Length: 217
Image 1 (cartoon, one colour):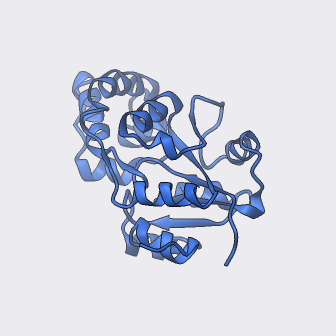
Image 2 (tube, helix red, strand yellow; image 1 turned 60 degrees about the horizontal axis):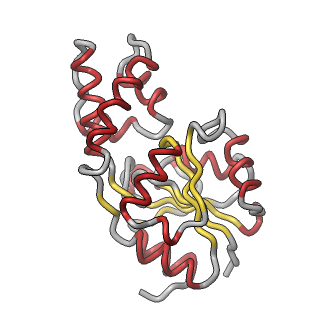
């Protein structure tokens, strides 16, 4: 079994479920701009490339930065209320920490928001660090963003992996030659991920823990 020293985790859809807050905030932005509010399912299927990228896909005729500004102002008011820890997240993070593996959140959520959420939910105690958009000029799946995250934590590609829930995550890993393991707890179903991904797909985090890291549940 391959030995990993660093594991990079996506946040939304992987470790946490923040889709209610994200949906509410895009609905708020749409209402402020007299646009058709997107459905919950459409938002979930569209997220992954940071707020401006998602905004450009949801509202292609609007200025994505304007949408993003309205989104962020509302998100600040609901981000602690409409969030849940995904099943298995705490167990996996704690178990990996206990066997000496460093866990890092690597996300397209804004870095300041990601750090605040992880602290609020109590996940920070098992994390070596958190890297998000706004911390650098890049976002997933740009190779520069992944390389920056690896350098920041002195991680080597051959002893690191990425765990995420979307093709964005897989691309962010494979673009630098890092292995990726996908979990169907977020924006894409198990069937969808299996049909699109080159990387192994698992139904939930306990499966990854058992099969990738040989952890006992």
